[in-house]
Amino acid sequence: MTSPSQISDDAIQTRKADHLRICLDDKVQCKTVTTGFECYRFSHCCLPELALSDIQLSTTFLGKSLDAPFLISSMTGGTELAKTINQRLATVAQHFKIPMGVGSQRIAVEHPQAADTFAVRSHAPDILLLANLGGVQLNYGYNTDTCRQIIDLLAADALILHLNPLQECIQSRGDTNFRGLLSQIEQLCQTLPVPVIVKEVGNGISSDLALRLIAAGVAAIDVAGAGGTSWAKVEGERATDLRQHHLGQTFAEWGLPTAECVTSIRAVAPDIPLIASGGLRNGLDAAKALALGADLAGMAYPFLQAAHESETAVYTLMELLIAELETVLFCTGNATLADLRSSQCLQPNRI
Image 1: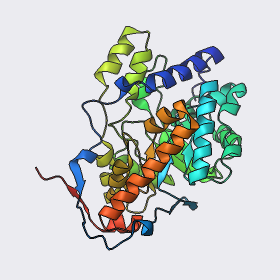
Image 2 (image 1 turned 120 degrees about the vertical axis):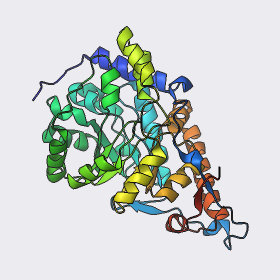
Image 3 (image 1 turned 180 degrees about the horizontal axis):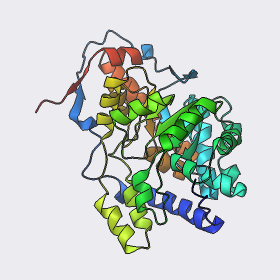
């Protein structure tokens, strides 16, 4: 096993602050690669035989009851601004009874003084709360005990392992030893007290890899496809090395579109709990993802923008997302999420 790649407190705090600052800039969004949701449209039903008040968005995920099928995707932690953002997000997640993930907790392991920037359980005592660690860290000194530590820190209901090979390639001094990770993920799935979720960070998960992850015991998959924030662009913007900067530009639009990931995985794995994230920006995107087979619609960028502004802005965003999703169900004649998925009201756009 490679020895841990410890990063100084100042360096990792700077990196986390850079990530927040850069991700709030529209220029790191994908421009030419899209989510693929624009290739689909809903069939409008002008006589839904429903009242809008009949619409029910409640669902379950990993055994937890949710009031709506949204996920506040993993974003941040490790700085005072990140602490404020996480607390605002958690408060709103609790109000709307939706799940939330935090950013990578590596900084909290290596620099315990940063742990409180993730500790949001007191703000959200009842929600499905997801801990988060880079899967590659299992090759850099992290193990089952480390994972238990970050789960306990958050009082988390599940652990996200994020896979980010492209980001690590472009990040200055990134961790790029991904050898043997699948067997280590399998071991974690067998030994941890909570379910393991595997996600990408914006480049997508193929159906072939999904099947291997399911065979290893992963409880859920978050496709985190291309079409939203490009972490190649983010790391390219941060790079002080000209080579890394150019790599970020070259691979800025790399990845599998989110809609393609959802449909391909659902075709081969009809029962795996599935999260669609990567470039979703509104309730209509969420509705398309759910109709294609996702169980939850995850978003980061819209929530980051709102939480950076205020807690009130996050409330307003969440109310709008719910209203948009309800409108889709109403105008397609579907009262529930199960109805939406089975109705086949989402069709490819006509050319």
